[in-house]
Image (cartoon, helix red, strand yellow):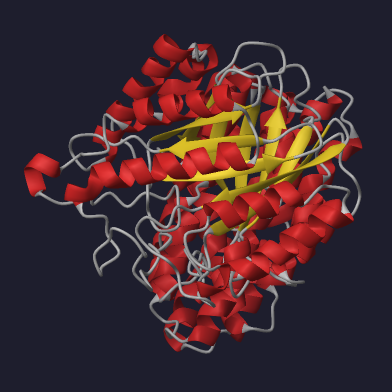
Length: 622
């Protein structure tokens, strides 16, 4: 899968920058001063008081001082680190929250190390959080409970750890930590989030996230951040952020209904109002954040909806007008917002786009809270009509092989259901996984394979598929047909079957069959072929997992009937390898690639959703 591209520097910033848009290192002190003044502008415009302004200035300078001049002596120029905190890669972002209950100013930081690397930034960020605890009383209790999950010594992803400070009238500064859930690779993010929630006393939260926020599967509903309020107390929040690629207002509405204070229709209306009535968010993805508190993880108090307004408005003037209109229509005073935006801007709002990058909405105590995210434009001013930091390439591929490798990267072996069974040795849940997958993916597989073999036009592909079909049917011996072997395997593990089985626990398998049949039996040869390729990869992942998960229960099963498992553990590996070979026979043409994505993602997502449903239903029935 391709990473999110860095924003193109479409126009130089208007003060203190060279023509490349990069901040010259020699001017780092001036830039820090400029950012501090911008922060002061926000606290003054929102009338947060002299003490709040002083606290904000003190915290800001102390947080940014250790790394604001990184690289000066070594290179004589600015930091080369491409920060994703803001669209122009400045490692600082501001935001303002407006509500009847009071306004807030927030600053998000990305501390940087002496060496421009992820691990160096990791060390710097850890030191910064220790300072927050030591100097400002930030509570790191829960932070330390999950630190090892998200901050391994050898990290992956675009960042290590971010920190945020929040300032409000008559309140001491408060702090938050933002972890990179893809620190061990995107495919590991679901099990990391599930484990972190479990450690923090929220064992039901993952199933709710999977059902509502991430219901379209990991390709389109991408887990991005895991955040903590660094405060003690029962209402301290744990937040999970999901990025929705190629989403619709209806997708945001489904995500929003997770919260116990959700207002029907509000999320979709907000999405349309702030985007100019966009029907599908293709240029840049939306976000939803679910905030959980301990003891209420089955129904989080709030969800927040994020619209990347800069990608769906010509200029910041258009964004301003949309925000002000939405505020007035929802009983919010737009004067503080207008005043603050006018004071913060260093150029005419109609002269570019991106100073206002996101607008977010959530309900708190029955009242709407609107948050506007503000880029400092320290490195770049994006031209009017451009799309800052677009995400349209997230699921764009140049070849069939890239599609296959993408599916492989989100292994079903890393699904939280597998991790749960491995951790608990839950024999009944293991049986449910096997039975539902059999009902969904195995009962009609030989017929599906025959269809794909018949419809594919390339003779090289048909030759490979015909051999697989022959193996599937037992090479002429029906007693060795995989369906017969699988039936025997199910008989062998019958002792693991739940007593008084609730019929609802077997429904995911039948739903899975209907979804898979759409892909395997498509009239589009490339969609059908991709379904087969993805299915073989997923089968290898699941069968290898089942072989391991059965080990603690071998004394209870009939070992003489496990032939299917042994045979398939060998055969599916070869078939998965052949998927890459089959991919070579698909032309690298846009229409064919689109069909491949539809088929491959369709199969993988159907299996992923089935596993989500098994875990959720089991939790409910327990």
